[in-house]
Image (tube, rainbow, N blue to C red; front, side):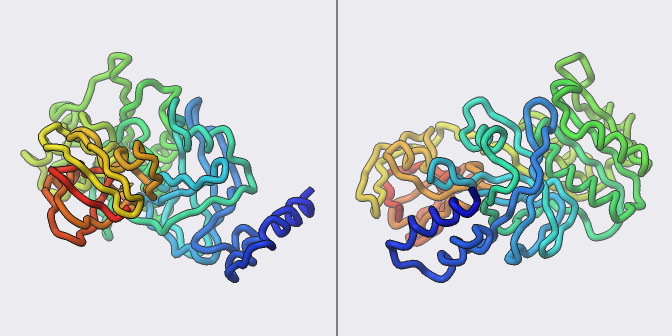
Length: 350
Ligand code: FES
């Protein structure tokens, strides 16, 4: 069967001229262009998610715990890319990496990864990015996470255990219930073995939510700690607000939802010059959605302004960047179309 597959791939491609990488890819999909990785394990992570273990090819440059990657999967011949946090500790060249994908009811890619991806498949992985990383020296850490915002912090916890972090840690995690609380058993075991504080809360079941009083009770030294937060906007905003008032250490936030697009902009007429299409884009529709609605398939990853996988050149006019909260009107500027809306008429190199 494997031989037939190889022959089929070769036969299908021989009719067209190929670049050297494409020939290599026929023999082994891992040898194609860019970083590729073989899926070496797929394991359920609670009832709504799976964890993937990937073995990247020789082009992988490594990653730090807490960073994210753009993962590309081919579904019915079309490449789809999404951004996922790594859940593995720091990795160097050729080391295996892990990530966890929660299933969304209408998520094409998350459904495919949960139900269609198989061990042995090859996926595309962009270089790791992100500033959500641990400090260089051991210092008290306050880690606050909610829902699947746990994923980058899971990478932290594995890294902290590996290097034997010497300073106090409180990890306060919020989840709807114990059943869907990701990595619960491993997190409990790590906290016990390493002497960290782990506080797990299920507010929907009556547990206390985030508050300054509760934080003081759990971790009185939090004001001098390095604070990390990743979770739903309500939780993240509460932590950031309290930290701005009272925190003395640094705060690092990982965004895990797209910025809210307020209907404060104007919207306008947007021309996608390469496709030669002009559409009316309302103030509440980001330019990635506007392009997709017009039948275009722009490259993208996270759809929330963090991976820069959707950068497109602004040829004229102006757009509103909702993540940076600014108007961009410089001809030739690169804009993240997933978090930008039209601000009057604009032309994009798409
Ligand atoms: S798709 Fe990631 S920044 Fe736009």
